[in-house]
Length: 335
Ligand SMILES: NC(=O)c1ccc[n+]([C@@H]2O[C@H](COP(=O)([O-])OP(=O)(O)OC[C@H]3O[C@@H](n4cnc5c(N)ncnc54)[C@H](O)[C@@H]3O)[C@@H](O)[C@H]2O)c1
Ligand SMILES: O[C@H]1[C@H](O)[C@@H](O)[C@H](O)[C@@H](O)[C@H]1O
Image (cartoon, rainbow, N blue to C red; front, side, top):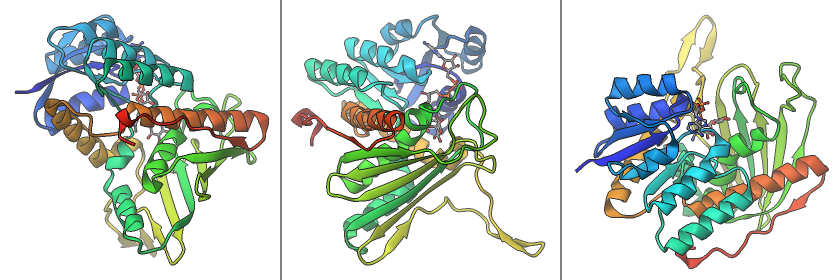
C-alpha cells in the first residue's frame, strides 16, 4: 500500500519533492499540500490531483495523511514538526530542524515524551554516494586517522532574503551534519573568520565566511562558505589523514577536450548536484516509515547541528572562539 504524504511548503524544493514522490520513488504518493502562496499551491494541487489545505496544521491533522514532509521556510519548521509529533505522524523535515537550539530541544523532548521516533531531518548529503565513499574510506583505516578537513560550500547567488547568519544556519549546516556523521564525533569549538566581503554580496551580507571547527578528538576543520560565488554550485571536501588524503568526487561528468581546454561542467544548483541523494533519502524514508522506523538523520542530529550552528553565530558576533557543549544524548536515539 502507498504511504500517503502531506507536503507543507511547495516552493523550490517542496515542488521537487512532490515530483520525486510522484514520479521517481515507489511506495508513496502525495495526497495533500499547503503553502502560504495559495495560487502556487493550488496550481500544484491541480497538476498532481491532490487536496489543497489552507494551513500546514490542517495537512498534518488530515485523516488521509499518513506522514508529513516539511519544506517551508526555516523559521516555520519547529511549529510543524511539533504538530506532527503531537499528531503521532512520521515527518521528514527539511534542514534545519529549527532555527534555534531551544526549539530543537523542545522537539527532542516532545519526541522523547511520546516514546517513539517520528522525526527525520533532511540532511541528504548522508545519502550522497561521494560522501558515503569518503566515510567507507575513513572507516577502512586506509589513510590512518583523519587530522584535518578542508571544505568548500559555494552557491552562485543567495536567495533574496539571505542573511549573514543564514550562511551558517541554512547553508553550512549541511557540512556541520555531514562532517559530524563522517567523523563520528561532535564538535568542541567554533570560530568564524570574515575575509574581505565580495563587492557582489548585497544588502550588507558578509560573504564569504570561513568557519573553523574543532572536533572533540582534536580534528581541525575549515569550511569556506561563499554564497555569491557567481560561477556555480560547488561543494568540496578533502580529508587529510596520517598516511594519505581523500577527496569528495563530483558526480560523474563528461570530461571535454575542446578549443585547447580540458573541462567538465560545474552544477548550477543543489537540485542537480544532489539529485541522487534526495532520491535515495526519500526512498529509504518511505521504506522505513512503512516499517515504523526512522532510518535517517534524527531529531537529535538536527539538535546537535543547531547547537553547533548557534555556537558559530555567537563566534562570528563576538569575534572569539566559542566552546561547544553537547548535552548527553539519550539512549532513545541509539548513541
Ligand atoms: N536539503 C537541501 O539541500 C535543501 C535544498 C533547498 C532547500 N532546503 C530547505 O527547504 C526549505 C524550503 O526551501 P526552498 O528553497 O524551497 O524555499 P522557497 O522559498 O522556494 O519555498 C518555501 C515555500 O514555503 C512557503 N511557506 C513559508 N512559510 C510557510 C508556512 N508557514 N506554511 C506553509 N508554507 C510556507 C513559501 O510560501 C514558499 O513557497 C528551507 O527550509 C530550506 O532550508 C533544503
Ligand atoms: O546554501 C544552500 C545549500 O547549498 C543548499 O544545499 C540548500 O540547503 C539551500 O537551502 C541553501 O540555501
